[in-house]
Length: 161
Image (cartoon, rainbow, N blue to C red; front, top):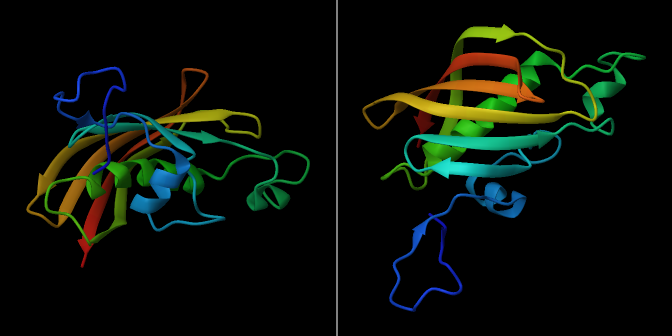
C-alpha cells in the first residue's frame, strides 16, 4: 500500500495511510484502461472501510456518440462500473489480497435517480459492508452530482487468483 508522510514532520514520525490516490496510483491498483478507466482520483480513503472517488464526465467519452445523439447521458451501467472501480480500490488494499484480481460479481438494489451528463463531476462513495472469507466482499455505493444522489446500489465482488 502506498504511504505518505508529512514533509515537515521529524524523521522519526511513522507513515500514515494515504488519503488521496492520483490517476497514476489508481492505475497501479486497478487493471482498467481507456475507455474503461472510470475513476480519475480518490479523494478520501479509509483502509478496509471506504473510498471516495471522482469521475469527471466529458463529452469526449466514446459512449456519448450513441447515448444519446442530441441528449448525451452517461449510461447507468457505466455509473455502476465507476462505483465498482472505487470499491476495487478498497478491496485491493485489504490485508492479504496482493496479486489477486477482484471482479464485479453482482449488484442489488440499484437505483438511478438523476441523469449524469457531460460537465458533471460524479462523486462516488463506496463503503465495505462485509467480507466473507478472503474471496467475497459486499459494498454499498452511492454516486452524487452537486451533492444530489444520482445512483446507488449494493455491489458484490469476488477474488480471482
